[in-house]
Length: 399
Image 1: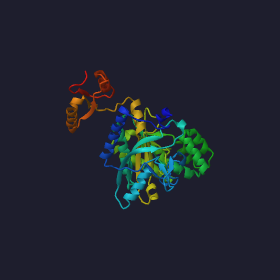
Image 2: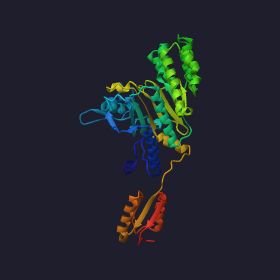
Image 3: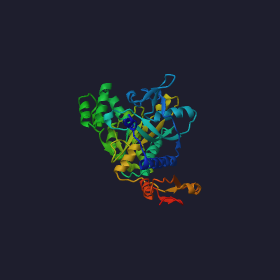
Image 4: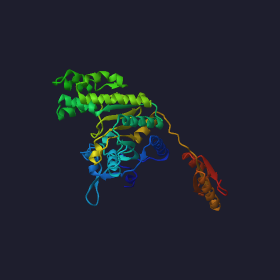
């Protein structure tokens, strides 16, 4: 029983010592970038009413939620995703605001994944939401901020893949596919089986231009110029054409920001959540099999909470970013400037006064009363284990 008490549940873990310090430093770097873009920090509750993440919202499936009840019998959930909480927050506190709202946040999310997936069930997210601006300039700002945040973390080699839900959605509508066929095609795309997609539409009674567009959904383009052929083929399909025009204009703005080399375009990209309505994106780097950042436009989410406002945002998974940095050998620099003062009973007052004076000057000081069973070597070993910069023995300590 005692051994069981020392273990954490499956899917969660303890973080301590240097790893914890590095995580805090990384979070500060990203938060500083968000502040530089004018985003304001907020906090929302770790758990909310079930309806905030219900099926109508289009977020995490119910079976993957951690659910429990309050004293009144209401169903509550640990948040699996912070964006719906931000939408609720903005609708409540900024209902009358008709100017853009820039919000940033940091918190843990909880998803009850299957054990075999090997994923953490509790992750730390840092994100930003731009509410009340439906322009392509807002899309570009969010993407540029994501790029600058990743660069601030220390990453140099990464790519953000951008798509638009209107492209694949427009193809499905134009092809007249039923719900079962659509689901099958989305499953094929999720598995990168683009040959399977081509076979699925081969026998369908649809325009040859549309078939050719379906054949392009697995392509990745480095600039808008490269998907000019897709634009030409989409002329007869307003929804697809509008989405491609949006990406083309987005590409022009990203060039002004100077971040376009980190951006690629994927016409068949799928979003994580069904509440996305416009551009969607995900960032990848070496050393992480998961997306390190994901986001998109969700213009119909805030109206669900009673506020008519276009919105776009993203979230970093800090744990995945930490793993990628480690595997790429990119160091998160820490300042090891803590001092340790070891004192005996006779020098207690002098030791405390010295520590207080040093702390006034922003020094980190650890006080430790001398244990007669310990030697100087024991304290030096402790200093080394904890990367303490300076060790001082006060008068009368054991040598």
